[in-house]
Length: 297
Image (cartoon, rainbow, N blue to C red):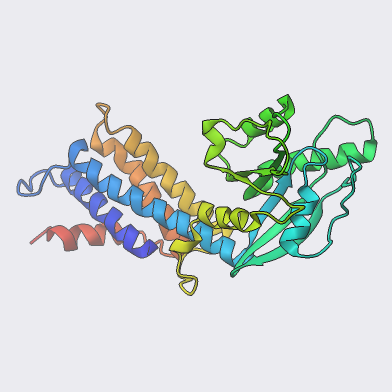
């Protein structure tokens, strides 16, 4: 997978190198930004797919860190209990019952959710509850998935709208609970496709929530027995770094920049991919030049 990707990149690098170092070979095509565009698009698409599949495979193996966020008494603890099918969290009518993070683990058809029920987010003078609220807000940034729970019979508060803005760019589901009551909530078009209505008291549409989670991570597209993708954080971080380099090069293709100036970033992406699979042979590009273009013959 990574080896094949490096082969595509080294073909591009070799062509650029031969243009620079062997200009006398007139029968070799000159690499221009227009020629480079489709090649980099192919590389970018392959890297993007490997990244997504690798991240999902890691989620399958290690579980999805899932935070249940919302203000007090929206049903966060009830959702945790219903998903786990046990009374893991204390559920009462008293706001602020959950003062710290409560953890649980659920298997959804082979997919593990590591769930964290959090303290209700609100202004409070209680020192212990304040610490719990702070932990809740931290979890928004440190989770793979956020289940943001709101009430069907209440308009979104300024605090809830602020949380929604924080969730932009993250994987989240707007869980609208208590849908047996009179509707007062209004969900904007920006969030409608990421929302699901449920009722924890009557166990309504919990399957819909579970299916939404599966859809969000595209698990139906992954063969669970195929674990050939990258499955550790270091390898995925390196791939992301290489991907950023390719994105940087692609972003400059419409400028007047010379192709030989782009070679450095392309080569760096290729070297980073080599780190992932332990291939850092320094003369590899030279070997490719002579084998691909029969130089010296």
